[in-house]
Amino acid sequence: MDILESPEAMRAWRAGCPGAVGLIPTMGFLHEGHLSLVAASRRQDTHTIASIFVNPTQFGPGEDFERYPRDEDRDLRLLRDAGVDAVYLPPPSAVYPPGFQTYVTVEEVTRRLEGEARPGHFRGVATIVLKLFNATTPTRAYFGRKDAQQLRVIRRMVRDLDLGLEIVPCAIVREPDGLAMSSRNVYLSPEDRAAAPVIRKSLLASKAAWDSGTRDADALRTLAIRGITAQSRANLEYVSLADDDTLDELYGFVSGPALLSTVVRFGHTRLLDNIELG
Ligand code: AMP
Image (cartoon, rainbow, N blue to C red):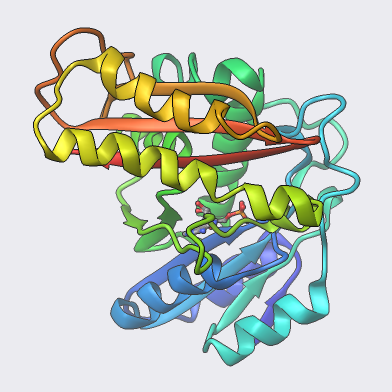
C-alpha cells in the first residue's frame, strides 16, 4: 500500500493506474462503516484509494476540529488489511497553502438541516471533495448514506460541474444495538452511549407507521420526535421529513420517496441518523 502526501504525488501515482479507480474520502479514525465503503470499491474497481484528511474548512468556530479523534497508525493498518492500494494523506499545508481563496458553493440543497445548523460546513465539504477528486480522478467515489445531505450535495456538485464520475451511495453500518457507527461515538459517556440507540428506535417507529400506510408528514415526524424526547439524556436538534432528492421539507400527504433525518445531541456530541421512506 502506497502513501501519498501531496496532490502532485497522488496524481503521479494515479497516472500509473489502468482500469477503474475507486476513491473513499474519510476523516480517519476508521470504523466498519468506512471499511464497508472500501469493500464496495474493492468489489468493482481495479484500484482503491482511501483518503484521510480532517478538513479544517468544514468545521465551524467552536466545533471539534482540534479534538477530532485521530489514530493514523491504526487507520493505515486497517486500510492495508482491507486491501487498499493507496492512501492519500496530505498535510493541511498541501491542501490549503498560503493564499488559498477558492471555494465551491452548492446552493439550495445546502440551505437547510446540517447546512443551517453548521454555516459554512458544506462549502468546506464541497471544496475538499472536489480537491480530492482532482488529486485522484476516480472512476467512482463512495459515500455513506449516514451523511445523507452530504451525499446529495456531492451528487449535485458532480452533475453541476460535469465531473463525470460515479457517486456510489453505501448503506449505514450500525452497532448491534442500532446506533449508527461514527468516529464521534467515542465522545459519548457510558450513560449516553447506552441511551443513544433511542435514535434508531424512534426512526424505526416512524418507518413502521409508513409501512402500515401512514402518509401524513406531521404524524410521521411526530412519532420520531416523541420517541427521542422521551429519553431524558437526548437533546433533540431537529427531525426532518424531506423530499428524498431536493431535501425540501414535506407537509401534508407524502407521496414520493422521503428522507426522515435527525440530529440528536448527547452532551456536546451531535449524532446524525436517517431512514429512507418509500
Ligand atoms: P467521515 O470520516 O466521518 O468523514 O466519513 C467518511 C465517509 O464514511 C462518509 O462518506 C460517511 O458517510 C461514511 N460513513 C461514516 N459512518 C458510516 C456508517 N456508519 N456507515 C456507512 N458509511 C459511513
